[in-house]
Length: 400
Image (cartoon, rainbow, N blue to C red):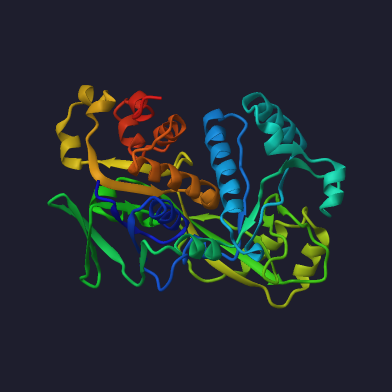
């Protein structure tokens, strides 16, 4: 097996995939268009790690739980500097009726729920200095991580070559290899290619049908104060990260397909307002603050909130096959050695490491039953198959 790969995009998805492959003997070329790694959504000062469950989507919740439990344990075991992460819990504040309903659903669906969450009560709120009378769920393994520190740690490996300032404009298959071309007319050859460039995943001919929406997000922060704020990640309309790197980080706004790169005062005000019910003293302090810094980045999200992770079709062969032939998973016309990992949305630092691990297992031919179920769920070609009334095969590309 030719264990060499070019990975396009050096955010959390690309860096995680590079990490898992390099650890298993692959030669990895990680290519980034910006001046350094982790410059998109992975360049924010902090990323919250906690699950976002839904009442009426059991399959999504199962995927969320797998991602969350894997990623939180994995980050804990990586050996990061202690100042760059804390997984000591996260609270999601919810309306009481919704919190009760969600807790019942999760308890029925997941036997491991006791190790995952407990309902918020007055004792918990007092312990973490969160305003009383709030309701919600406390996630035991939740927390935060410093994104750039995590990405830098992941690619610190002799088998990983990092190339920056190279915007890739095309990918071509020639003589069993892939040729990746940059806007500077540089060509990179490898046997495998993985596209991990977030909202730009559709820029290539082979992936132009993979629609994502780019969600603009603005986060803000202020210098660390003497206020006693929650010592764990706390989320309601917005989120508040515990003091890290001498700053309080809070956010974030979401605006679909809004490409304004500038910080907006209106978004800063939204972020301040979003923490009012979390910690009123901090909210009042921010209202008086004269210097509030911030950052804008974009998150790529799919229509069904499920990421694109896996292989894509050979367009020519796909167009030659009839619907009845495509109804059988063994006939699906996959492109050899081209993969995507994108569309992680606002849960990028929860989903991407787990999905990268599964994709690396696929490349190493070590898929477990659970890995196969995940790739069935994240199949990048699900929309094209469903549009042909092939919903069944779209979610059963692997026998489980």
